[in-house]
Image 1 (spheres, one colour):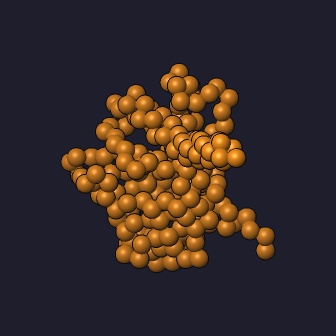
Image 2: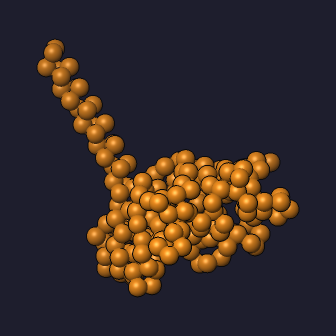
Image 3: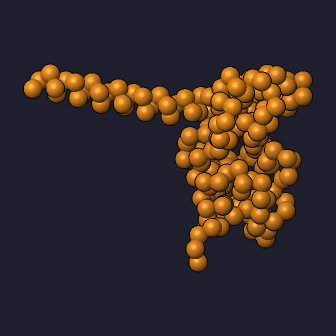
Length: 195
C-alpha cells in the first residue's frame, strides 16, 4: 500500500515539474529567439537588453528604452517605468517569430511547422513614462482601432494606463488619448463581446 502511495506521489511530482517547465520553456524559447534575432541584426536595431521576459532596445545617450517584446505566457503584464536603469518611453511590439521566418536560426528554437506564438496577455498596464505605442509595421495608435495591435494581442481584454501618463488614458479597458477625445484601441476580446 505504501509503495503504491509513494509511486503516485512521485508521479504527481513529475507531472507538476513537467507542467511548470513547459510553461517556463514557452516564454524562455521566445526570449532566446529575441536574443538571437536582435544579436543578428544589431546593426539595424542597435543595443538591446532583456529582463523579466521583456526584450528592449535602448539608447545610452538618452537613457531611454523601447519595449519590443513582452512576456508571452503571462496574462497580466505591467510594462515597467524603468528597465535596467533606462526610462521606458516607447512600446513598439515586434512579432519576432514572423520577422525571423526566413532565417535558419528560428529552427533552433521552434520546429518548422509550429504555430506563431502570440502573447497570452489579457491585462496590459502602461506606465506614466510611455509616450508612443506601436506595432511592428510602424503603425502607431493614431488611426482608429489600430487593427495590427488587435491582431497581435488577440487575448487582450483591458488596458490599464497610469493616471500620471500625459499621453494616454484608459476607460472601461479601452485606450484613449489623454484628453479622452480620441478612441485609439478597443481590445479585441472586449470588441468581440456579444451585445
